[in-house]
Length: 405
Image (cartoon, rainbow, N blue to C red; front, side, top):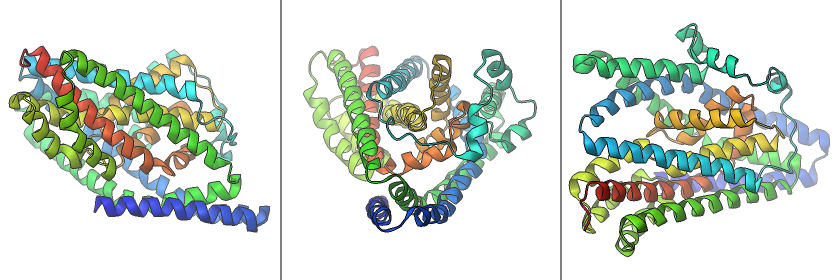
């Protein structure tokens, strides 16, 4: 199913590019504008569907995740060390993405004008620490949900999740209801993402038709820059693993080779989970630690996905020529750090996380369409990177526990 969907997305990309080149060469300016307007019905619908699911999805998944995190921490020493590694690796991935997107500048040269409907939101009040802090707490949770105020929803969710975890018995009815809402929203998200091929075709066709074939060079820089960033992240992670294994890195590389290839080919790190679990145990990592760290890692340690979030968000800012202050970029990093933890298991989770962050930093929401056009190509790389990150995390916790020879 996943492989067939991936092929459909790739076919939609190829058809979108071909149709866009044909339209750019055959149609005049007015006809191209009319074509883009017609295709915008598809892309606008897709964006509205994503907007529809964000608030309940973030709230339910984040509350459930925080409530269960407390239970994992009670396991004790191993849980604490695992979470320390996850937070450190997450900050590393996000920071590297932030630095490298500035270094590579993949979005410069396109010079897109922000959509007129969003122009006011982009050029209004500058970033202010006072306004940001007062904006953190919702005056009304219902209003925050209605307006998709993601940061306010996150703050409220943290309070609710922490309160549930602190109640004896963890308010089982409320927690069960939250988990059921999360399950329902995950299923709805899956339905929405079935429209991805149509949205990819419409986005690419409209973009290439309007901007010309040179826009493909921007995409090439984006894809090439991101894969270069992933390779650098791999180098850092595997260097850490080499240190932890005292130079005996070959068995680990052998154990993760097949899971990495499987994750890359299916664009799904979950598809490789059984083989990864078996492979890490076969090279001598303790079963108790492997079976504990890996499941948590699939929820809280998606290194490739987190690098993608900062890389893609700043790419959107670059294609519109919008500068974010240092304070905004640090805030973005911390926001993505939290919201990405609440999106575990969500189909195309990174797209939802990125889309939720755009309005807070006055970035055009339609910028997501330029990322969506090549998202599947990038999803393959970040899924494989998630496998590497979780494997190294398991090695690190095993070393800290003194379970490696």
